[in-house]
Amino acid sequence: MTADDLLARHRAVLPSWMPLYYAEPIELVSGEGRRVTDAQGRTYLDFFGGVLTNMIGYDIAEIREAVQRQLATGIVHTSTLYLIRQQVELAEKIARLSGIPDARVFFTNSGTEANEAALLMATNHRRSHQVLAVRNSYHGRSYATMGITGNRGWSASQLNPLQVAWLHSGERLRGLLARLPEADRIDAAVEDLREVLATQTSGDVACLLAEPIQGVGGFVHGPDGLFAAWKKVLDEHGILLISDEVQTGWGRTGEHFWGYQAHGITPDLLTFAKGIGNGFALAGVVGRAEVMEAVPAISFSTFGGNPISTAAGNAVLDYLLDHDLQANAARTGAILVEGLRAAVGDLDCVAEVRGKGLMLGVEFVRPGTTEPDAALATRVFEGCRAGGLLVGKGGLHGNVLRMGPPLTLTDQEAREGLAILVEAIRSGAAESVTR
Ligand SMILES: Cc1ncc(COP(=O)(O)O)c(C=O)c1O
Image 1 (cartoon, rainbow, N blue to C red):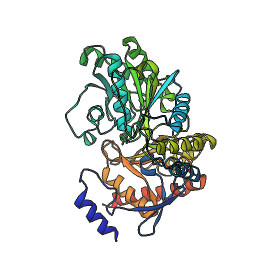
Image 2: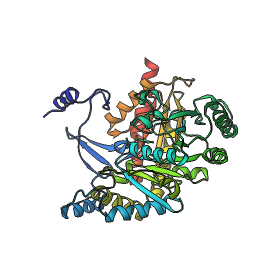
Image 3: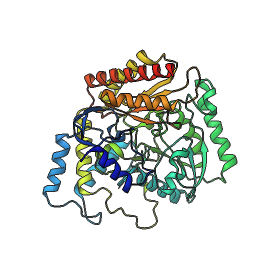
Image 4: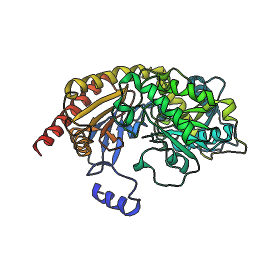
C-alpha cells in the first residue's frame, strides 16, 4: 500500500470538508516520546501532538500499562448505569484540581459534548437561552457549539438553538480594540460587554463561554485580568462564566494549571478535553454543584467516562503531576519563544511571536502591514515538515503557525525544533522577497 493509494481511497470515501494537512498528506504509523514515524519510514519531531491531544507523548509506559490492565479485566464498557471505580477516582482528582469549591464532574467523549453539556447546565440554571460568546472563538461542531463559534470558516450551519451576542476578544493585533493602548483594552472590552448586554440582549443572559487563549483562533488572547473585569459585570446580572479549557488546561500555559488562572477569578464551570486522555476519547465539564445539578431530566452519555478512557485519564493526570509537566512547559516554552523572538521576531513578515508555555504561535503578514499572509504560513508549515518537524496552522485568516508539543518535551528537543522552525521561517520569508 503506498501513501498515494491511501490518499485516493480517503478522498473517495471521506467527506472533503474534513481537511488533511500538507500538499502530500502523511500517514503516521508509529510513535515514541515526542517523535512519530510515517508510512515511508520518515521520522518527525511532533510539535502539534494531534492538535494538543497527545499531551504526554507517544507510547508512554504508564498510560499503556493502565489501559492494558483494564483490557485484561475483560471489561471495556459497562455504561454509566454501573459504578466505575476509575471514573469516580478521576472525577475526585479533577474536582480537586479545578479550583472550584464543592465541584461536580460530568464526563463526555469530546470537547464539543463538554461545551454542549456546560450550555445545557447554564441555560437550565438561568432559564435562558441567551449566551455571550467571543469573536474568533472555536467551541465545537454541534449546533450550539457552532452557534457560539466566532469563526466563519468553522461554523458550518446557520441553525442555532441559542441566542448569541458577541464580545470583542481584546486581542493585541486584530479587531477594533487592537488599536487601543494595552492599558485601555480591558476597559474597552468591559464597555463593549456593557453595551452588548444593554443593546443585544433582553436581560437574564445565561452565560459567557470563552477560551482563555483562543486555540483555533491562532493562540490569541486578551490581556491578563480581562476575565476578572468581565466577571465583575457578569456578577451584577447573575450571568455565569464558563471557561473553555480544552486547549489551555492541565498546565500547558506553564504559568498556571488552567488558563482562567491568569485572570484571578474562578469560573462557574470549566470544560476540558483533548490532553486528558492522551488520545483516548475523554472530556467533560467540572463546575459548581448548584449549576451542575440544574439538569431537569436524565442526561446520560453511553461512552462518556468509560472504564478504558478513565483508566487512561487517571494515568495521564498522575504522570502529569508526578513529573510536574507544568514547570516543564514553562521552561521548554521559554526556550522556544525566546529563541523564536531572537531569531525571527524582527522579520517584517512576522507580526507576532506569542504564547504561553507550550502554546505558541507565529503570525505572518505582508511586510510592514497587518494584512495576513496565509501563503507564507503555508510555505513555512511545509518547510517545517520537510525539515522533520510537525506543527499546526490556524488563525481566522489561516496565517498563524501553531505549536503545542507534548508537555514532556525536553530542552534538547525544544532546541532541535527551534532550529527547524527558524530555518523554515527564514527560507519562507526569503522566498517571499524573491517572488
Ligand atoms: C477550545 C476548543 N473547544 C472545543 C473544541 C471541540 O473539541 P472536540 O473536537 O473534541 O469536539 C476544540 C477542538 O479543537 C477546542 O479547541
